[in-house]
Image (tube, one colour):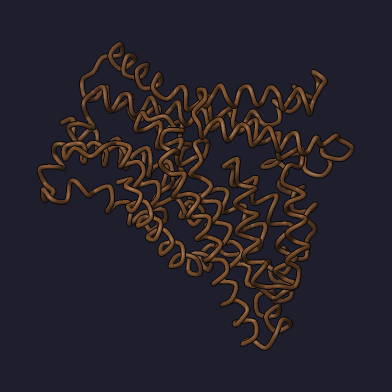
Length: 455
């Protein structure tokens, strides 16, 4: 009975998230409660399960909230603006260099792990450049998706935060094993951008030159042509709810650019070295950033109020995931599911199931959301492989590495829809263009992770 009810809870949550019927907080909070009642557990028992689950993810939730606030301040203060401006100027007119620059800039700007904000900052600068050179805009989005996915390996990135909440392993501990994989991945992303840039250069030549390529990729009156002709200010203003106050908010403000850059570097290094609890590191860094950049009380309050919704949303999702996992663990549903599935699977498959799921990570991103992948699938795989003595951190590493670059190919990613709207692109064409490359890239990353002994 526990297995059936547990599976019903998971399938219901996945279905609701997959078809976007409710927000994750509702699905992760309410469905496990109903399932536990049906399994015969009392209100006081369920409350205890909830408390145990939330206690395990509290540190992760707080880290996310303060990390989002900190990096939002850095973006508003223009930390990444000079980098974008300089690289756009350096690569103007060189197709291959533009492709490489796209990968590098996307990685740098996505340091905060917020996909919507990264698209809002980078796309308006790149779209006119790609049009001027006749470059395929789907190439731009593919390169951005690769780099942004790799940067999501940081401990404050959404996938790693979710994996940490599920496995009860601290995000920075998960990240320590992923650092070499992440660094190699960024290097491989540059190599991939170089190769795709060379291919794009040949295709522009084969199409009959830049003018012919522009006519092909940006036909007059098309949504792509309209998007590429719009100014960065127009694009950011029309989507101001997703980003910061952009140019208008930055005008006339002291930048303290190098101090902000040094503060960001110290923050990241402190996390990598594990000097303090991640949440406290970001709390202190945010305090310094606010005092430095917004000396008045009203300005500090304005910044917190502006970015609080995004920070609270992520913290609430992590807390709800704690409730979901606490109930499924406390009731014994996860253990029951794992035992029954273990009896069905061939013995030799149990110990490598997490690797097999990792290999299918990108295709699974097309079928499920990030929340469903980590909150519903990961705990089940962890329980199943535990019977073969597989360490939970190995499961988290394999499943994260396998799916990480597929984050921004999923139709269930709101940030991706924002990017498609900004660039005037179509989801179906983008998936056809990017899927093979991203899946192939993820398989290479799986090999890299295996060579480093992560699973």
